[in-house]
Length: 192
Ligand code: GRF
Image (cartoon, rainbow, N blue to C red):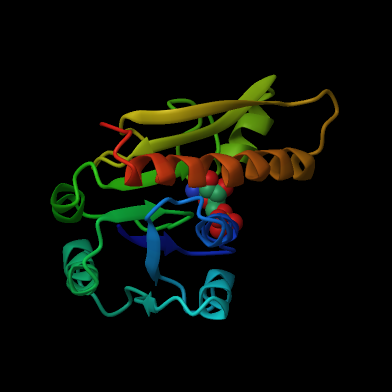
C-alpha cells in the first residue's frame, strides 16, 4: 500500500515511520511521498536523505483551501496513494479532501482527545496541571481533532516535571504508536 506522510515541521514522526518501514514494521506499506506546506521544514531533509519524493506546497498562491487541496489530490492520484498519514501537518484539510479520502487519513495528536484539542496539546495539558495526558491516533474527519479514535496511550506527568521532559515522553510514545497504527491499517486490521 502506497503511503503519503504530510508534515510541516521537525518530522520526528516521519522519521519513526521511515525507520519502521526499513525494518519491515509497516508490513507492505511504503512511504511514496512526503507532502509539506513549509519549504524550510526539517522533515524535508529527513525525506530527501531517504530518497522519498517530496511535494512542497506552501499555500501562499492558492486562493482557497479547496484549491490547495486539489493540487495535492492530483499528486496523490499520480502516486496511487492508499493511506494518508498526518504527522504534524499544520494546515486544516478541506471537506472535499477529507471526504475523498474518508477513512484513509490518520492523525496523531499529543494529548488524550477529546481533551486538549488544537495546536498546543502538550503545553495545554501541562499548563492545566493534569496528572495524566497522552497520545491519540485517530481517523480524520472534517471537524478538527475529532474523528474516531484508534489508539490512546496515557503518559503521566510527574510532580515538578519540566515541559521539555513531558514533550520528550510524549514523542517517545508517538514514535512507537504511530508505526503500529499504520501497520494495522495496511494489514486491514482497522475499521473506522
Ligand atoms: C507531534 O507531537 C504530533 O502529535 C503533532 O505534531 C507533532 C509533530 O512532531 N500532531 P514531528 O514533526 O513529527 O516531530
